[in-house]
Image (cartoon, rainbow over the protein chains, first blue to last red):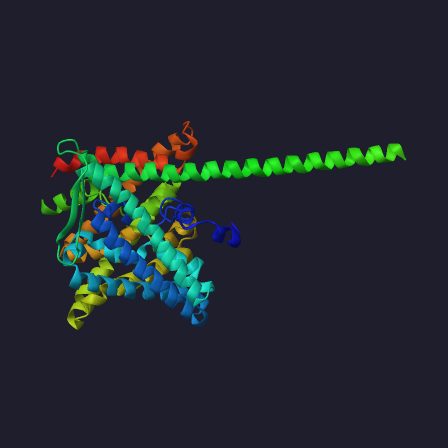
Length: 243
Length: 190
């Protein structure tokens, strides 16, 4: 995909096309594990946006100074330091959220999206571009988390609830499915896999239909060009005949 | 008895893939063929066992005496990366045939979150060394078990008529969902 083409697409289509989770299958572990509630998804999303943006900025700055043979360990240390910082901040200000997310905060270190962006983008682009890329990728990841957690929380517990992570005060709570009619399987592992499968298939379907459209358009263009060439040849022949 | 309980629960009940969702990337990547699943499984067992025992020793003999517990994440990930690199070099030099069959999976393991997860889990659960050894064998064994079952199912799936959008990974997730239901039956075992 060319750069200009990517820029032409709107924000939402970028979220779907370049979606790291449902399109490229990166960072799946945390997406499946922590999306039981909306709160977890938002907390995890913010943590990843923070780590990804800052690591992209730092790596784009230090990339020219890093010897090629050891660049992966260097990047990993940068990422691990940032994750430790995030972990400490969350432990201090949002202890409840930290304990529910648990090891998954530490496992941001091995989240493929972060090292992947460092390798594929940040090491060869300038600071501003890398920061923008980190922010977009982080948002796109958060968007996937929100989609998963909305489906799982609403179907699984029937209640849409959001609380303040600092004080654990419930900000709003809305029961969408009457109690007794919710489908608890969506809060379990099985529900996570199923929800993921449906969303991934949806993204694949959108991509497939767009590809088909693009192919059809290209074919129509080629046909038109062929017809034009034929007509030109015919008129040339006519002209010859007339002469 | 306690150790057996620990082993079974890490192997089946709290299976890394189906109940903790850890190690999904290699799980999807190498589960299309049975032979590569076996290679990956063996490599993962070896690396997780070695890396978590070393991390345990590093934590209790270096980091705790120095009061640097908060550095565990950075130290463990570097230890894992160094260990994988070392194993790769060692195998390459001493057993070219083993390197040929395992080699390509080794670099992939550094980014396998299961390795870091087991190393951290041994510390957060407060396991002693024997428990650490048992846990670090049981967890990757569970990983390999599910990987093998899944690979055999996916080999059949390759010839199935699946709707276009569901081809490849989405249908694999549906299979994983059904396997998760089956594995949840083990919950009453211990």
